[in-house]
Length: 305
Image (cartoon, rainbow, N blue to C red; front, side, top):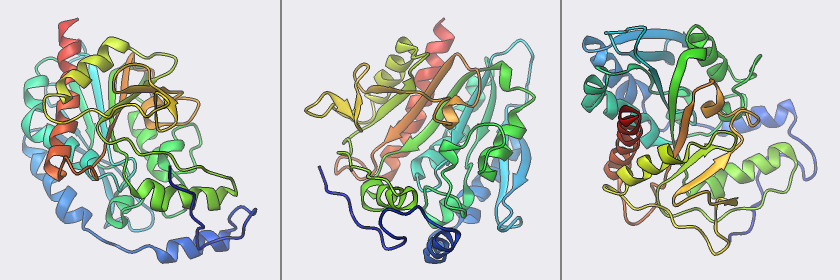
């Protein structure tokens, strides 16, 4: 286990002030293009799916529009499936996996489901490769009423008309080495807490809902992903990221209590994917394929019910 690192912003034992948050924001820089890598692909799918803009980030509305893609043959008799990517913008395969699913698989599943896909919840985070938004807020801890994160608030407002009817929700994420090298030290400094670093699992895993784990659903997703990449083994304590293993490749979180994206609805079937892109056994393409496999495995299971 790695030892915690001292973060260059803030004072030991004191939560960040507004000045500290401004100093953190000043350290951030654009490292890739949301327009070129995400928007261009999303807009190109407008010919096959309904394209809806549900907002834009206030830091630059022209640069960071927020889009959803929906299956066109929407029918009230079909179950609603929600797929979200880029809640943490730095998690590349979550964004690209969501888009790849729409490019390659979604039309076939749209015969059976109403599909709503949010390719990139946090476009500023995507460009700056960040877990937080410009206000140093984690959108994935902010899915609740009167959310302080505008990314989360915009998505909640957009989904409000169908929220109670969402049948399944798959949220696409990654766990990276930068969680320990950058994001957890920043979190510890921001909140003035001791935040022990965890061993980062080498492989794919899922996070279910503690209250509603849906074991068979999670297992079906893991089985499908096993065909394309390796599943993370538990550590010596039988845990993944500090949480007891529920089954092979699966842990559970209190999704609603923690304000996680996966807990935003009353969906019966919920799962959060976690890919490890820094593994020597994978590359970026394999991570994207694994995300698509997870979605397909979950939807195939639902079709079998």
